[in-house]
Image (tube, rainbow, N blue to C red; front, side, top):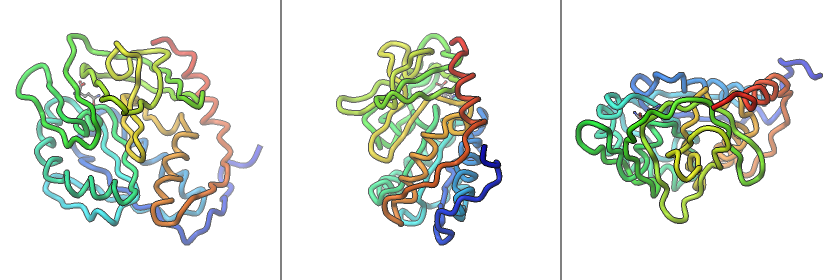
Length: 251
Ligand code: GLN
């Protein structure tokens, strides 16, 4: 088995620019682990990585970042950032139009749609980056989730939300929830995957235990400025062991 710290050459002139949206607000479910995992998988291929936190009131240069991440949070954090996210709507849409990738988890995912209607308080208008909407359900959906994608690969993670997200016609889900609730506990769909826009309810965090998906996002993000990528395979022995173990967990 190859040693863990073997450096794989992927071309050291490559650079991955990551924007972590609202890192200090949408951060209570450990979703920062997605940035840690993606950055490390890039560095193992000798790709330089730059991570910037984009917070309230900060503008985005729509042509600078390759990858955007927005994590999950409680309703009260979502209320704080929703208005600011709407101010960034044009910049984010332009960035995605320029080929940037966005991964959104739970609370962040909900606000990329048309709206999130929490249990209490006003409806939070989203940025309609995707044709989806979310309404708070009467029960919290908490537990392990196993997702089967169209290509028969699987994703594992943990969900903790009351919001029920419904996708518009023609919007593809990330996959089917084989175990757990996924988007809403009704249509058995989990997340969304629309071009370079990804949403999911999977905390965990998601990417460390789903290395194939992490590399899919990494390839897409690098392709924005460097064209199609062939990433050197990594020794994912430990990641795959963790994935396989998580697949056996009950909802
Ligand atoms: N507050 C939202 C909900 O409960 C999102 C929760 C989260 O980000 N895990 O559905």
